Image 1: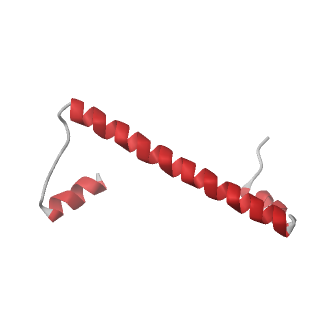
Image 2 (image 1 turned 180 degrees about the vertical axis):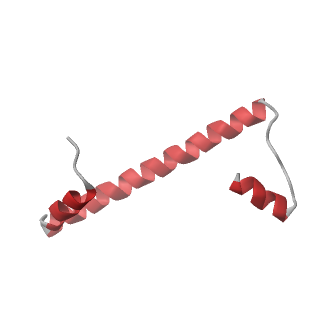
Length: 70
C-alpha cells in the first residue's frame, strides 16, 4: 500500500488532538531511533577504517573541512 505525502498530511489533519500528540511522540521516537542507527553505522565505518589503517587525521581546518565534505 503506497500513500503519498499529501494524503498522509490530510489524514493527520483529520485526527483528534490526542491522536496528533501520540503521533508526534511516535515520530519523535522514530527519528531518534534513525539518528542512533546513523551514528552507529558511522561508528562501524570508523572502526573498519581503523582496522584498515585508513583513518585520516588533521589539525588543518581547511583540510578538515574538505574531509567533511567528501
